[in-house]
Length: 317
Image 1 (tube, rainbow, N blue to C red):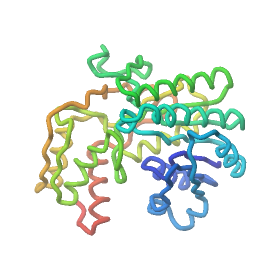
Image 2 (cartoon, rainbow, N blue to C red; image 1 turned 120 degrees about the horizontal axis):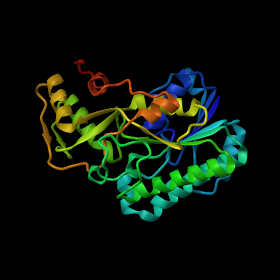
Image 3 (cartoon, rainbow, N blue to C red; image 1 turned 180 degrees about the horizontal axis):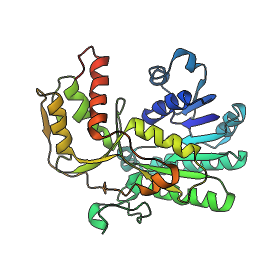
Image 4 (tube, rainbow, N blue to C red; image 1 turned 60 degrees about the horizontal axis):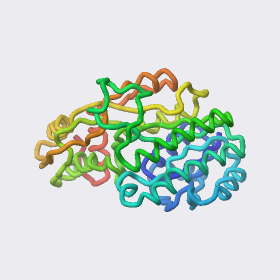
């Protein structure tokens, strides 16, 4: 199987490339606005790099380059991860619309024109609103969209277009609403506070962590990558978008666990709330693509800490 991953040298894309190659993919083309080959080289062997092609490009331009690259590399499936993240979207609504909406439409249109087998793409839990806006303790997969941010609105629009392309053109599109992803390499986005909480203490540095009064759904990067592959390999699903979650825990509880592993840690929790629905009913993803999280918070946080410590010549815990 030959895959094209937009945003392929980013956080999720690099782990996904590693796993696709381990699972036997023939070719992975990483299409990126600002490609960083070193991110991929850190995760795959030199022999596997022969199966990786890194291409500079912008999904929000017209789709001529996407079509050409897909044809040249006999791409069968696209995994679309490229996008403008939440904070940047709030600062620049025009670019958010151009990159997150037009860019996604260009990917759908490319797949339609070439009759590709599937498009899996990154939606977001930001399509939902705050916990106070819902009656359910565990939010069902089909809960109404009540986005409070421009980023969430762009993802909600793209979900609508995913349904449109499926219903009108029979293009198998599947959006994944990832919860808060953490792991080595998380450097950007609204979930970057997880890096502050985990990686600074791992290196003996003081951490100041926002949203200290809240709880979130902790999705370890390996689970996020595995869920994406399950989605790419699945038959057409009933849902056109699925919540991909992990382990729901208070941020204060994760702080306690980090301090248990690293007793000398200096971690200050700043008051405040993330203020986004974070307790999800994950049964739709389990039923439709057989996804269940395998990484508990404890397992993922410990692995994250030890990878950072090992890379910096420190003993593991």
